[in-house]
Amino acid sequence: MDRGGDEQGKQSGGHGGNDVTEWKKVAELRAIVEAQDPAAKEEDDFMLRRFLRARDHNVGKASAMFLKYLAWKRAAKPNGPITDDEVRNELAQEKLYVQGHDKMGCPMVYLFGCRHIAAKRDINEFKRYVVYILDNTCANLPAGQEKFAAVVDLKGFGYANCDVRAMLESLDIMQNNYPERLGRVLLIHVPYVFMAAWKMVYPFIDDNTKKKFVFVADKDLDATLRDALDEHQLPEEFGGKLKLQGYNNASGATDY
Image (tube, rainbow, N blue to C red; front, side, top):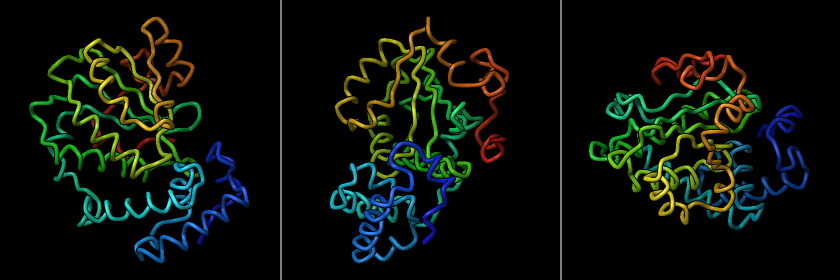
């Protein structure tokens, strides 16, 4: 199993990189999960390391989490990767873009909350859409980068867009099945109605994930975005030069 070179360790950030003790725990974790579910052999050591880190290097807790992930994967993607046709209605809303990267090299996800209409969504298609976006985003991460960052623009967000169940489903999928993938999330133009929903969702977010959400005041918006993104990587919507394209046009075509 390829455990990656020094460059991967340097860029993966934070948790000890190629620390010998950590990789020994990864090997221990692999032995446990492969003994209980042969499907674990299909997953690489970096994925195992992310699950290990998500459980603070507790091998027992990480193995339980990983085995649940393998069972979820079989149920959520019985026929392999989610196809465009399976999420056609969600894609048509063009509420999300994966394009460009921040100054740390993390690919950027842009979500426009006012384009999500709660009354029109089918929860099963929405869950497939979350998996579709996460899988495609992670598949297109550049070498040595394990995380993506996001900007959630809530300008124009109202009661029609408020969807607590969708928020909870998204968090559940991401926290339990894509650990250590999410970098910083900047929430901008945040209205009161969203904060009311956020208070309902907040108790269900794990402590590590809570730290990643940053609410940006309007007066600090320009400085915060320009601190995170070079001008040619900053979307036109926020005063930069990057032209956002529809998801299917931009996906996989970003110049990192």
